[in-house]
Length: 437
Image (spheres, rainbow, N blue to C red):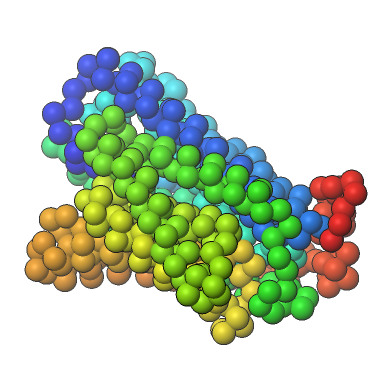
């Protein structure tokens, strides 16, 4: 999200505006690349008969959410700043249809963003990529067994009723002469520190993934070790694209090329690096062998955890967070077998748990605001309310939406079709012409 540091000594100088807008557009392109990264990351871990279905859910999210964002999503999340239908909860979706207000501002920079030295359209494009990847992340929880049409219906309804409002809770503001004068309850009323979407993106997606895993039920033959990744290099490629794009995700969230952006960049380098080490240590102790899938998963866990905290941690504490979340998530992915829910690709174990760890960690180790520096539990309490508030809201609505779809048009394919392969049944395609399963 954009912060007070962006507003300090802000001017309407055209050069500053152009530099910051350019950086935001580059960052947006990096974040958009993360969704194909998710497609490869997830696609490599499923069966060869399901890889097209898995990757199509990410590309479907790019198509649908990208269009909905321009039509009314931006308006629901940011349009008008203080034009609330329900104060602090729901913004007016009709205030800025098709980004009309941003386009019609004659000065080239929307008045809403004048004090931030960025073009409103650049910010709208940047935030669109956040909405897209949040939806794509959910799909990993229902791999191998979901109908594509039902997924698209869920994606459209969920992003409208859950992501767009939650983005306004976390990211929205009104830029006035004295800085932040209004905004969503999570950040500006409670004081939650969520720099780039630990709550709005990862906890949000992880909770929705858990709900859908419960609605769709277990895959045929669900058990530990039931299916091995069909293409490990795909998963490593996906993790690499995610890490590359994540520099835009985190550093771009400052909205300016400044010191805070640089700190976010460094922490986005070191936390996932430490996450790899934490995860591999657990694998070495538990199984005696460090795996490439474990390294990729540890990197993603570190990226998830540093997302809300990259602006407020010193690099040393970012390393500690990375190791911690790598260890925690390496254990957390086995919860599905103990609790009996089929989270196919560990969306819950990595994104929900990793998002919670990173968000709560700020309350203890955040520079100047955490327990260690302030001696107060106030920030930890705020982080907990923000994190669990988003988690409960997302889970409940995702469960309701998923259940309605399952009871009406059907969300899950039949067991017979699952065994035969989702790709040929749903899409009429095969990933490999000489497939070996």
